[in-house]
Image (cartoon, rainbow, N blue to C red; front, side):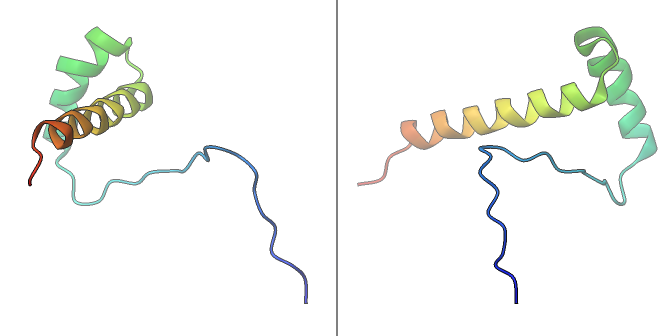
Length: 67
């Protein structure tokens, strides 16, 4: 039996698949957000918006502290 390999990377890239997602919503997102702000790069737009959501959640968590 072989030992499992441990990956010593800080961050791993993954592929993301969207299921049951409205084509109309994706098209509108591309037109209103991706094209003007991310030069048409959907991948960068999703990454950026996910990171922003994480940062905003951290701010909210610090702001709302329960005794």
